[in-house]
Length: 266
Image: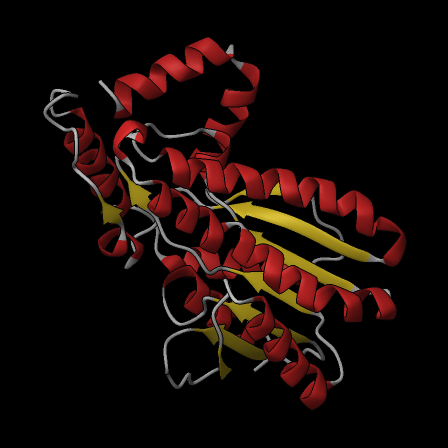
């Protein structure tokens, strides 16, 4: 095993991309702590129970790591889930929970870890966003919005932290073959009024996800980004997805929106 004198805290590291990040960092010799709601034992990390939507819980998790290690060098925010359905028929409570977990869950973890990083004038924050944050997907509107919010959050946060030697970056995976697909909270309400487009869109997305990249690819990428000397505000995992995101920034927004409509909303 490689040796690396760094300490990492990973949120949502019990499965999927989070677990892959835990294993990849541990293989690099990083001492890894993981926090999630599930009561589990991890081979390559110390599990600390915690819910990212609970600000006090995140403060306690961070305090525990600081008491044991004296510092957190790397914070990796992976906790999240997805909902799907038409905006018109999505319950406001479901939409708020989507943002509460995916966006404010990151906010809670970052707020808890930042004081120590700022005082040490060192730290790396890695936030798992999504290609959907750059190219929003119809019928996964609130998920896309939560990831777009993360991209903006990280970009602005970098400016705040620059004088303190703390860097933040968002990584955007594309389709991944993980348990995320089966865990998606799907609402077919209104599918009749929308001529079956809701179910067709979600089925297409799930097919793409099941045939997507292994989470180990994302884990290795997160390890690389976590340990690099400098990082960009955001980056995309996978060459094909890098090309898609680059094209979405170069092409007229109307054209991009039309292509996405043909793929996921027609």
